[in-house]
Length: 485
Image 1 (cartoon, rainbow, N blue to C red):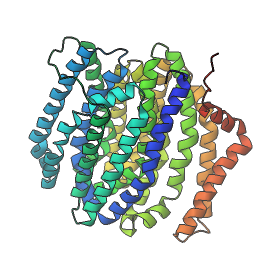
Image 2: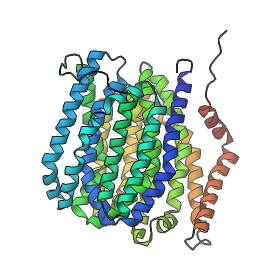
Image 3: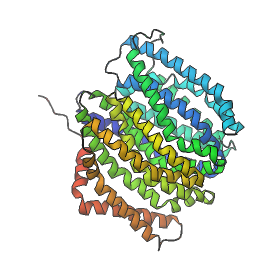
Image 4: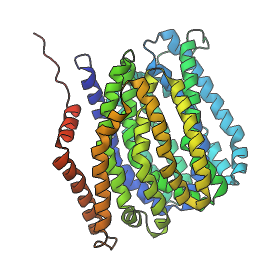
């Protein structure tokens, strides 16, 4: 996109990523809710426990394979061949590691089926090794239209496959096989769209810098994964599978908006910020605007859902999931801060400051581990409460560090998002007051509450902070390319 400004390139990329994700969002959500109604808390519990190891290893692998290729300013054919060889060896090692540790991992959590699940999805590493180069190259080119269409197609087919398996009595295997279908389709499509036209090499002499950054990103992904999954890991040792299943579903429900929105931003932001890594202040300016826009958008989503979980969960998931209402509500209340913190990561990575993110994550683990150990004694609501009470401490400790490297004021950030916080708080209050009259859990009452929340949030901003809404609209408008004569 040579004729577009940097801002226009980013917005155009975001448009295609958004189209791909929004296009599949409703379909996947509907199918996910349908699957949840079919399966049991125990099914989700064993998959959540097995996913601790599998997701951990895939996260480490992705950080090693993708981040250096996207962040690097220039890549030669020799570097690509060498790093392709390194990727194949790394993924093969992870395949062997999961196979060898599956039995031990299942023994820790006292579940034989966890062993079976891990031995099946370990084969995914052999597929994932083949998607790294095409995915990284398309991201460097900011070819997000192709990436979005590939992900959308794979996710829709995988969701339908998961539902089909669930309807045919596969139980927890429906979730496992659905993930394998998604990975397989994605790898095939990426290989067809951007085939690898060179052989892997075992000459690593030209990839030392790539390997060093990849190693830092892998180490960061290890500690970041431990941080984000500390609740399930600790809770799985102290709570029953049913309680872990309740918390896993609560977490899945609360994270749905973030898992759809944040990867969209992160997918575009990292390669985009990498193009201007020479100017931290410029990155900081864009990040401040991104934080403002995200606060405007995600606060009504997370807090709006939190205000009506006692209506949504019985209507969508069924009566047997009513115990998930409280933990879901508690997690949703803290999600805007979690979203904001993770939004900083692509900018810091683009600056090559992987060590800063590593230190920040270690600090986060130190604080949250205490809260989670205490909260795990109170079941699924206790784990959710640990996030609600512990993460604000983490966030404000890290905020000062992030703003130092991005060269803008923490107080300036807080002032810019304060109107959205106040509008969201008033929205929560009025929705809960309205429940005094709209007591019965029906779709009509739920619709009325949602409309009341939306009108309250936008109405308050329009009446008292109209300039913020107009400013946000200007930030989202694309710069028109200047014509040349």
